[in-house]
Length: 635
Image 1 (cartoon, rainbow, N blue to C red):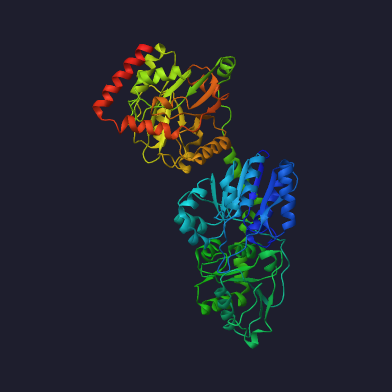
Image 2 (image 1 turned 45 degrees about the vertical axis):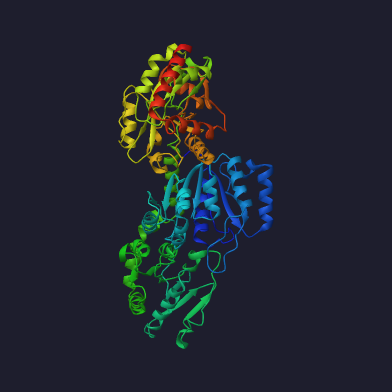
């Protein structure tokens, strides 16, 4: 078990819908997590406006009171009223601004370790929670969902939201395959649980057949057509659990009315609906499957008879734990029902095949064991203090200097600033140290390091390396040029071989070549520092996202001007104790204060254009000679 964590589970479904499989899963695992000493919140929409006002008031006045003490039961926060459904279907309008603000305020007020969102399709409370989360993010995609089709209209936006997930869980292999098809990524399968009651004594009487009306409407029609084909002499009765009841298109034949009863579902969900069943029928054609009903049936010791769609085949082990039939074939459904009704030995064999699931997979304590292991692995990837104690002691009383960790010289193809001009400007700006990070070249940094003493500025030899399709990474304190075009992992290995530090620049700026989120997760253990502020990033949200990533993985944060013109130097500074070498640098960075000077982007970008694109080559050479001469004379 992990050390006690602060965990929020977020469901997009109204908490009053206690029979909803997602809400049932959330309620069961959060109870288990709380019993293990974790501090657990459940964030959900509601239909109770009074409850919303009460929780919003507490959020404004004393947000820390929302988080239970270790071992206390989970606290349910009603984050907002349930959104009205569009009459033409199940799609919802955008999340109201007040809900979004409440979620943002909650994330700002509470230091959560884990934000676990369920079905974070936009727009929903789950997707809003994921957008504003400052915690490690886990997402669970439950049953294969028809909502995937509707997400394709806003695919790029959805990808960006999903891109904040640190772990993606799928309830079933079929869900993982479907998600990977539409949103390629790595999905781990973690089956939901089910209620497993104590074994009951052998029952005498008719075979009890149950159908839970949770699939497409056509599934109920297929079930009733199958019942019509059963031998009327066989000993069975049937129950349809349905909130919708039977429609005029699915009438009961006269001789079935005494053998089939229709009942309303209760708050117990699928578990109570199948508690006394011998056989549970599922007839989905694949649009709206109900795999939780299959699990509830196996948990209760009933035999599932299900259509051959991937998620049902997966749960029934292709027929080892229940029988299957071809969708839209009521004759086959009836034939399989006849086998189950008339063959008690077959039912006993199939029931025994589910014993392992009932013992080791379905009980919610077992499900929570697996979930706790996911949390433990994820939290274990957060950085501790990796600094050398001796180095920390050495820098403790050093004077503070200002450092710019990202800049370019004319050794980069997109910069016209001579080394001497860079050094002179750094000195005039009051910088004590700079990192020269030319694109795919180290010669400018080596040249600057040789001349640094003449200008009274410390130079960190560095290079901003373009990797193969995985963005850019900076190596600080390196000695030799690192070739471009290697994989991100190979580039990092070369930085480490040279004794350098791995610095990730502008990590979420989609206007730069950046690693995607999953590539960052692959190398998170190797990152030594991350750039959380870059004044050349045009959209501030990208810098904010980098800050969140640094905070949740506890990676040392840094900043750099990314200057391609001398005038951009020092527009952001790292104020930190003086240092010598990479060990002391990391120790000093733990005391770093980032000082920003916003509002210079258009100015420095215009200067870069004038110096590199708008000026003819001959004029650039003459200009460079004059600037070098002036900088050398002043140095």
